[in-house]
Amino acid sequence: CRYNDEPRERTFEVRNEGLFSFAFCIGTSDEEAEGFAKLLGATPPSLLLGSEHEEQARELGLLPPVVEAPAQEEDEDDKTYRARLALHDKEQLTAQRDFFAQATSVDDAAAPDAGSLTTKQFSVTPSGGVVEPGQTLPVTVTFTPEGLQHHRDILKILVAGCDPDDKYIQSAAKYELLAESRSPTIDYDNYYQIFEEQAVIGALEDDAPGGGLPMNACFAVAEKVFSFGTTTLMDDGKGIGERFKITNTSKVTSNVSFEIKAKEGDDPRAQNADACFVVQPTQWEVPPHEHRYVTVYFHARELREYRAVFLATVAEQSEDAIGALEFELAGKGTLPSVSVEGVSHEETGECVPFGRLQVGRTRSRTITVRNDGVLDATALINFSEEDKHFVCKHAGTSVSLKPGASQDVPILFRALPQKDGDGTDRDVSAKLAIKVIDNRYEASSIELKGATFETDVSIEDLPDGEEDDLKFGNLALGDGPTELRAEFTLRNVRNSTVRFAWPDHDSVTFVPKIGHIPAGGARTVVATFASPEPSSVDEELVLQTQQISFDVKQPEPEEPAETEEATEEEPPASPSKES
Image (cartoon, rainbow, N blue to C red; front, side):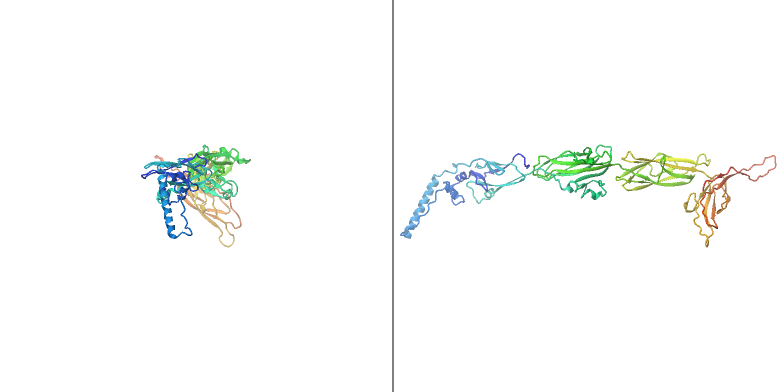
């Protein structure tokens, strides 16, 4: 029981299952029962003869005194001495018979007092009495707690006129009393039990060598600090919760109170920190050798580190007991963030330039979303201003990134046919928005910019998969090849025949240089680079194209039929902008 509890009572019974009443008294192994003399008086004298209590009974006058046998005189012969001894024994038997005849009967003997026996921390009531046949007498033992220790005592229950060899009498001769007074307490130093749901490390620097706090929740033994790690600033009122195990290590119920208090000293991290930590519940009643969980919530309100103190105290605890659980709480507030790579930075903001693209072709660019922070980050990707020329498969989805992870986001630019078809460049654009969840301050708007144009022919199958560049490579003058060749295709994208013509150049020739391509048709062109002297070519050549239509005139009926040859109507040449 608790060291400061009220006295506690337990009861046992003394039952008479015989045919005669008996008297009993209770003592201890160290002290004789106060009613023992009366108990002997209630015992038949014949049972006292030869018992361990015979001498004490004679002292109390419950048995006749012992008269020593006479000694043999010097001049007395043996026959005379034996006769004198026989007479002495006869006189003793007569005296004993007369003593027993005059003695008080057992029924008339005074019963032991029914008072209380007090020994150490125990009190026994009654400590004696008489039990009639079939009667049951309850005996109450009261224990008064004191100190933080075990208490033990042994009672001796003595019954008048009983058989000392009876097994029940023998067991009652040693009746053990046990009690323990304890102070309520809790587990305060078994950190692996207290923080069973978190990691326990030696010191903060073990997981955060560069200083600061570890990434995940943990308890550092050296500093006695529980760290929530780096958490997100959130709008809800609770924040991040971590559970601690509170174990009652005592044999009595512990009433435990929990509180968050400010850290003492001038530590700037302690400023307003106690308001960022909340403990629930604030009190637990923990039964003996059981446990309960308490939850501490951390809600960072600023982008900085916080420090406070967690304290668990036990009510009505003895001064000799150790049971207060106290340690620091630490946490840091931050926001998830991402960076975007593969974009150009202009005065108007971030953009992805796709350049000029011929109608019917596509061009791909890739941006990379990277998490350079310390928290998991989820980025939402969507078009804030959409254009059908741009396609992004990640639009309308989210990208989740661990710290240090990255995700490539491909964007496709499609040059769709122009409605007017005048062949001029047409600028197109869209805006791709990237927003980080749980960070209302970080949102990127990336402009996708490009231009489409139409030509009479399309240059295709350039070496190395190039779109607009014809790369010959290097030509070694001297022994070996004297020229470099490259093949590609000219395809007519118009609904009429197209005439083409390549310009003259000192080092580059085209075969065919001039030709016609029917509607939807294609021609293979062989380009040759030759130079007798060291030189370098890096310039733009413009292919001249011209649409050709055929107008066949029918003869008039009254005049002889006359077939005219097809004439070419040459609209103004539209130079191709393919380089």
